[in-house]
Image (cartoon, rainbow, N blue to C red; front, side, top):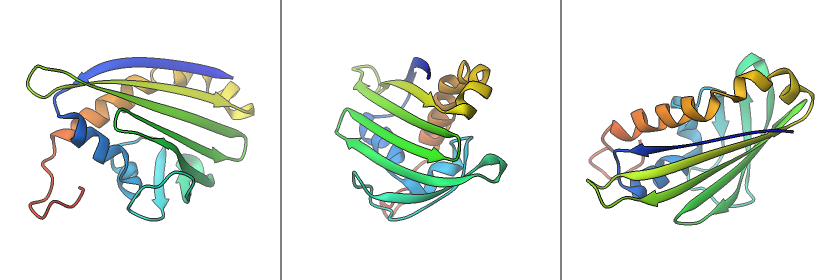
Length: 143
């Protein structure tokens, strides 16, 4: 098992960050590990999505917790399982959000990829911040 965690302030309201985290089919646009997530647009705990990740691995992706201030996901491919938690704390300054991302990995691939976990929360938080900077469509649908 390997664990890494990091917090960052994102220049976006918590509701916007929350919406982006719950748009599973769009996760590959900013999450560096995912190639494709197929399943319902509306996130629901316990629903299994089909997942393709880098290096051609296929598996499943599931939301295990969805609250206004926390989202937890779990995904599995052969040799690797990951649990990712996103804690959202609205900040009083300019509608910012403190986001804490914690990643826990298990399996033989987790040991092989252990060094990559050191920078993974930072990379995901940076890409999430970039994604929140993209304005949502005028019709109110997620990006």
